[in-house]
Amino acid sequence: PIPEPEIEFHLHPTAAPPSAPPGHPPEWSQYAHASAPPLDDMVAPKADSPPPRSSVVGGAAAIGAVAGLAVLGPLAAVVGGAGMAAAAIADRGKVGKAARGGGKGVWQFNKEHKATERTKSAAIAVGQSIG
Image 1: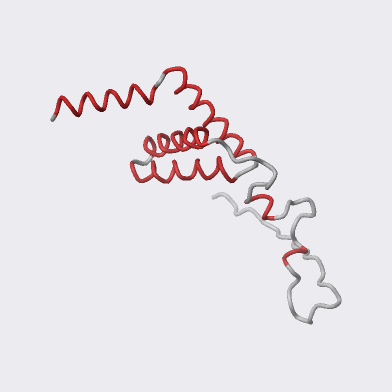
Image 2: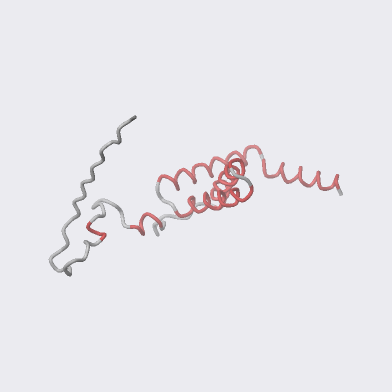
């Protein structure tokens, strides 16, 4: 049999400030990394940056919807599309930058190949041939 590994935990919390009541654990802020940005800066877009164009957000939503549909089905398509659109709008980090970059790529592809117009005309043609 394989012996169980020995796991040691070494927790050394920062001491509570002298003004803290006795017996209370230290505040969360004492555990937070000093260089971590405030939560508001990580979640909300900065006021001085313009919002992304709707075509870029739509392209990002299309990527998320297609990925969700391919992996888990129609419900995941809705969730994936909404998630990618939200990331493209609100996230100013690496994820948001990737979502906006993908959305811009979809927009450029559609502009060059007129995918939206072709899909629309094909859907109209199929609808007329059925009805």
